Length: 459
Image 1 (cartoon, rainbow, N blue to C red):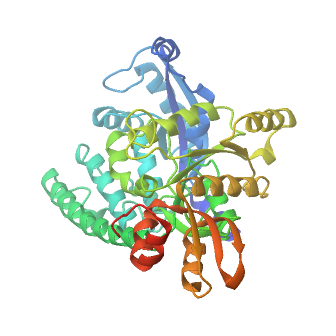
Image 2 (tube, helix red, strand yellow):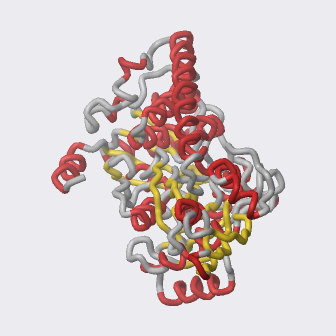
C-alpha cells in the first residue's frame, strides 16, 4: 500500500471510538478460577490494534468500569448518557465495543447514541473480510458473517462502504441480502456450505498431491501480529502481506524451503490466533488451520517484546489443544513444537538478555528477529534436526550403476554418512521418513529387500 493511498484513507476514514467495558469483579473471578487475566491496558491496546487493522480513524478511547452487566445496554444508563455527549463532541461515527454484545444490547445502544456499533465479533469479521483472498477464505468469512447476522437482521457495516469502495459485506449489502429475513439468510448459508464442501474436496486433492512429493510440512502458528508472516518471508524469500496489523494473514500460504542439510520442507503460514474468539467463528475458520493438522513440526512464533506474551502463549496453546495437537487428547503422533522468541531486535537490553538466557536453557526454544534475520539460521537447524529425527534409520549399500536410487535417497532422506569403496560401491547411513518407505519399496523393490526394511504398502 503506497503513501498516497494511506493518506487518502486517513482523510476519508470513518471516525471511530474504542470502548473497553471492564467488569470490576473480573480480576477476582479470574484468580478464583486459576486463570490469568489480561490487564485493562492490554485489552485496550489490542482493541485499538483491531480497529487500526481496517484503517479506521481512532478519535478517542475509554475503559468503562462496570459493577454488573446490564442485559439491556451492557453499561449503566448514566454512563450511556455521559458517553453520548462525548461522542457528539468528538463527532464520532462508529463505536467499537471490545466485548460481545447481544442483539438487544447492540440495538439499544445504537438507538441511544444514534451511531453504528461493532462489537468484538463484528470487527474481527470485518478484518477477516478484508484479508480473505482465496475462494475458501471469502466463503468462510461470508458464512461466519451470515450466522452472526442472522440473529440481528439490521443494516450493518454499510458505514465502511465509503472508505473501502463498497466492500462492506463481501461486495455490499445488496449482493448478500443482509436486510432479508431469516429464511433468505438461511438459504444463503446452505448454499455457501455446499460450495465450501466442493472447495474442501479440491484442497484435499491438493494435499494428496503434496503428500506424493513428498516433503514434510512445517507450520508457523502464533498470536496475531507475532511476526509469522515476516518470518515466513525471511525463510522463503516470498512477498506475503506482512504489516504491523492484527490478522495480516488469513489464508494459508505455503512455500518450499531448503534446510541446511539440503532437505526440503513445505513451510505453511497460518491465520493468527486471538483471545476470546467466538465459538462459531473458530468453527468457520477451522479450515484455515487444516495445514497445521498435517504438520510434522509446529513452530510457535511469539512476540517476545509484548508485555503479556505469556498470556498470548496460553491462548495459542489452548487453540492447538482444541485442534488435537497438544495435551492429553492429541490426535496422531506427537509433533515437535519449537518456540521462536521473535522481535528481540526491539527489546530493551535487560529483557533481551533474559530471553537469550531462557533460550539457552530450553532446547526447543530459539531467539530471533524475523526483521533482521538474527537467529534464523539456528531456527532452520533446529527444524532440520527434528524433521530428520522423525525418520527411520537405514544402512544400505548401492552398486555403482544404482545412481538413480542414490539420487532418490538424497532427495527424500537425510544422509548421515557416505563411504565409497572399490568399484564405486557406496555405503550409506541415512534416515528415511516412514511416509517414504512405501514409495521406496515400490520404486526400488530389490534394493528395498536388500536393505532388510519392514514391508510397507506403497501409498
